[in-house]
Amino acid sequence: MSMQFQRICIFNLSFHCKFIEGHIIVGQGQALSFLTFTPMNYRRLGKSGLQLSELSLGSWITFGNQIGNEVSEKLMDIAYDAGINFFDNAEVYAAGKSEEVMGDILRKKGWARDTFTVSSKVFWGAGGKMPTQRGLHRKHIVEACEAGMKRLQVDYLDLYFCHRPDKNTPIEETVWSMHNLILQGKVLYWGTSEWSAQEIMEAHMVAQRYNLIGPTMEQPQYNMLVRQKVEVEFSQIYKTVGLGTTIWSPLASGVLSGKYNSGSAEDFRLKRTELNWLAETLLTDENISKLKKLGDLASDLSMTMAQLGVAWCLKNPNVSTVILGASKVEQLKENLQAAEMLDLLTDEVMLKIDEILDNKPIHPAY
Ligand code: NDP
Image (tube, rainbow, N blue to C red; front, top):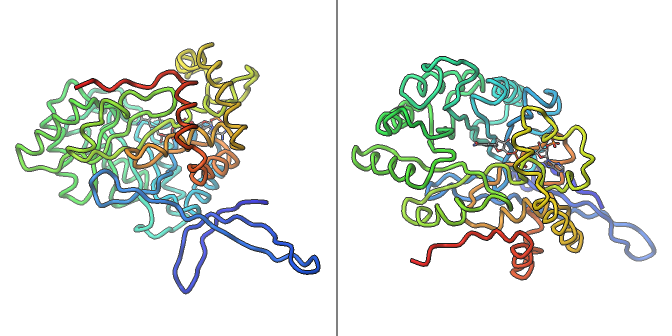
C-alpha cells in the first residue's frame, strides 16, 4: 500500500487530502482500486481566529544552505499539497538566503495568497554586525520587516516573530513597533520566540496600557527532550491571554528519529561543525539510552521513531502547529503521516513514554 498527498476536486470543492491507495480483491479475483484520505487538521492560533495546519514546514539550516533549491521546492510542493498552510522563516536563516529561496518558490508556484501563511523573525539580523542591524528597536524592526517582505516577495507577513527578547530595548518600543506594522498592513499577527512567560506578559501589559495589539503567539522549542516551557511555564497564559504556539525542533534536530543511536551518522545535521555545541548537548549517553527504548516502543506500534516524536508533540492541545524540518523529501513524507497515528498514542502509551523519558515537568502545587 502506498500513500501520496494530492489536492482533489469533488463537486467543484477543492480539498487538501492525504490519499491512501490500495486494492480490494472482489468476486473472481478482480481488483478494485480504492482511495481513502485523511484531511489535514487545522488548529486555531491561540485565541486568534487564524487556523494553521497542525503540521507546518520550516527552513532553518536547510533552505539556502544544506539543501539545493530544487529539493526546497519539492518540500514546499509536498507540504502544500498535503494541506500545510504555514511556512516558517527568519531573517537570520542562511543570512537572508532562506527567505530568498522561499520567496522564489512562492512566486514560481503562484499559489493564491489566501491559501498559505508565511512568517519571518526579527532579532539577529541578516548578516550585518552593526547594532542598528539587529535587535528589537524600532529601526531594525521596521527595516527588517521591509527586507523580509522583499526577500519573500510578499506584500505582508502573516506572522512576524521577535526571535529572542532584547534586553537593550524597552518593551514599549517593541510593542509599539509591532502594533504599527499591523496598522500599516505589513504584518497580520505578531509574536515572540523563546521569550519567558513573564516577558510575554509584560508585552501584554504594555499593549493593554496603550490599547495596542499584543502578541498572539510564541515559538518555543518543544519535543520529548525539552518540555518545561510548553508544559508548565506557559500553562496559565494559554487560558488568560490565549497564547498560541508554533513549536520548533519537534525531533530535536533529528535526534528523535533515532538515526544517531548507532553512532554511524554521516551527512546528518548534527555532524555539521557549526552545530557541535548542539550535538554535545543532545547526544549524551543518557539520551541515547532513552532513544533506544523509544525505538523499541515505536516498532511495537508499527511507527517510525520520527512519527512517534511528531505525533507526541501533536498530542498536546496547547500546540497550535508543529513546524517540521526536513533535508529530504522522504523525511517530510514520513513525518506527515504522524498526524494519522495519534490514536496509537493511547493514555497507556503516553505513560510508557513518560516512564522512558523520566523528564515530565512538575507543575507547582499552588
Ligand atoms: P526537527 O527537530 O524536526 O529537525 C529537522 C531535521 O531532522 C531535518 O532537517 C533532518 O536533518 C532530520 N530529520 C527530520 N525528519 C527526519 C526523519 N524522518 N528521519 C531522519 N531524519 C529526519 O526540526 P527543526 O530543528 O528543523 O525545526 C523545525 C523548524 O522550526 C525550523 O525549520 C525553523 O523554521 C523553526 N525553528 C525555529 C527556531 C526558533 O528559535 N524560533 C529554532 C529552530 C528551528 P538531517 O537530515 O540533516 O539530519
